[in-house]
Image (spheres, rainbow, N blue to C red):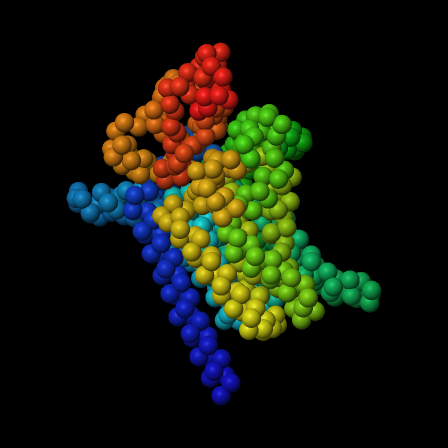
Length: 555
């Protein structure tokens, strides 16, 4: 009877999970209706289309540096349509970048299913549904899960690689090499999604050491050197399998073009590769075992990140101490505080508290360590190392692990009372209301700590607030309000509409300094464009401050 009841609960959980994922897809479909292309999508699509024509070259260091083979998935429907369909409106739609976004939505949905199944395996049906609800109603996942970029692909494949590694290290019984092969392929595929996945190497190594540490120490204390050797040998075999999968998959992803380029003849831009090249200069005949496009892209990404030429903006300040390119160590902590829903943060804190109180009932080394290690690594990396602080999207990779862990709150081990469960339910309702209040604009989502949405620019700008996805709404507003002046070249009175990044000075620092130093917005259009009302008297005080007293006449 108990097994039948458990099976029924699992079946109901699966149905609810599918309904949540259907909601996720509907939110994407509705939100994309008038969302114009963001600044990166055309480049990603073009590189994917180029790869589908068996051309892996990177043509421009600025626009091609972070483009990856996973973009072939977005370009594939158009490639198939162009090959098999006659010229028609339907074919043009299939070839459009806008329709190719649904490929990313499909992958984002698969990531949601992974979050559910992982949390379900660890914490039961209720824990799986809680983790999935946090995922489905995360505004940052909704924002980037429907774009032709690499952020969602990286988040998906990194989570998949860590999940597969969890299955491998906890595998019991026969078939372990099939599990290891699957894990190796997941790791290798992640390298085709985004260069961030290269950090899976230290992450998985740290996970493996933490997982195996008790057994290793026990063998050393017992003097079981033969057993220790077998354990180390098996780890080495797994590592060799992962390396082999990496070489095969990366070569396939770039069609094997320009593999085995001589290291001595390669020209690198980043100091990392230049130092490695110099250190190995005395070794004759060294060649790169992967296609040149993979190495070149990584070289360009490392160079651009370290060049410190980014306009970094946080809390109204351009660069730490006002220095352009000077990073903020607190950037991603502040972004988390404002960009993640308050309900999500409270549920995570509650899960951490309950977990700490019932720590002995869980199995941290076998389970939660796999969730904690990637989060801790990327928290360290984003805080102390990463320099391209131009958007919260770089932190998306930790969200699946955090959502899975939060599912522990509803596990039997947590043993929450009825009131606590009602609190969890209330927070989930608050989460949905908060996120849906921004529909269909999820990129500019800020939680209720920013109550006046026209003031979000005081916290963050760049891709945390706008990615040029709101032009349809701006054009409609300008048609409906023909008297509005759009980004004037010189100070003028009237109602003005200005993009956030220009107003705060991310681009063309001096163009709107007169506006930035003297006026604040009265409203916004689709969050990314700010409205100002400048009277002739107020403008005269700005352009000719000696003509009257500002405090007496005001703006």
